[in-house]
Image (cartoon, rainbow, N blue to C red; front, top):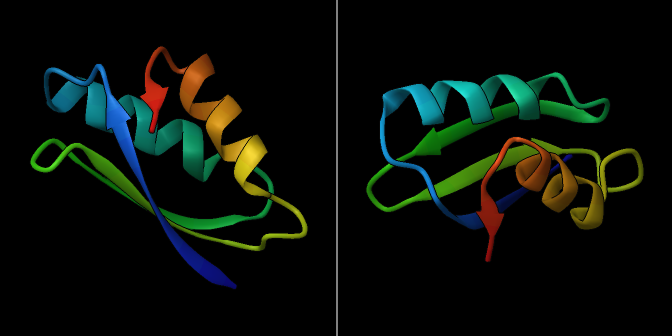
Length: 68
């Protein structure tokens, strides 16, 4: 497992945080996700072979946010 931090743009409330957390944690290969508004980022513990960075960026985009 590896932990990665990704800056996330577009979150405005706790509902956004909860929505993105659920989307990330539902992704195969993601063990846990902690999403915060301040600073706006996601800290994701994942298996890079099952859930590489490109997949995580896609999950964030599909949830309506932008990964930086």
